[in-house]
Image 1 (cartoon, rainbow, N blue to C red):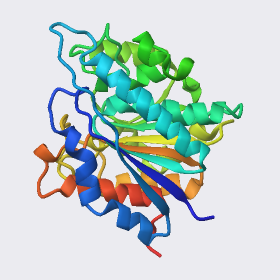
Image 2 (image 1 turned 180 degrees about the horizontal axis):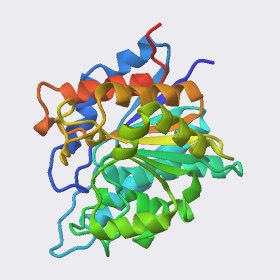
Image 3 (image 1 turned 60 degrees about the vertical axis):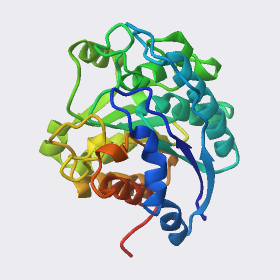
Length: 301
């Protein structure tokens, strides 16, 4: 069956410390994403970019730019839900990772309407499970997993009118290598499965991804992949705001996406935190475009 996809740009950087991720959607499109998808037979429509409302940072805020980010997530949730209901795979281009609350909720609600659950594979150097109370920075891009699981700020946690968005037993983190001290407490209590870089080094990327897909698929309609480009080692992907050495290789990242495609259970996809201001000759955006194509079925033959 021919795959159908809707591309949604979210030029948002309120959730991060560094500005620049707002240029991610344009950079990924400029790297040839739409043509790459068309070339592999995907019926792709570009729905353009979401409007980002103005915001003023309040001094000492534990949820920086929270109201503006919540509005963006609300709009994204509606658009992702509509794409799913139309039989299309929503591909969300970021923008910082705070948008993940909106995209995951949109997919979750579409299948919840049918009485089904979804799984989640969160691919990130960071756990993103801080709450406003545990976050040392107040940056919302470090909180989306907590909000998806019903923790933290009630506005985000109740997005879509329900909480949590999915069951912790169907959630996996892959590539984790940088976790805040108090955030680690949240992570241990959460019940989600973590495939850290140490585990990937020890057992291999293929084995870890296959386990993650099994977990995300267990009694669900399928799974959403939320991929933060900072999970890739900065030697290959320098154009992101929160660099941490020791990440996935180029091939490990592609293997993850290829296995997700091979499962034929991918319901939605985010590719976030591409920051052209930190990039070198748009190299990170090119990798992002290639990774999306792999997730949508591009193969070597």
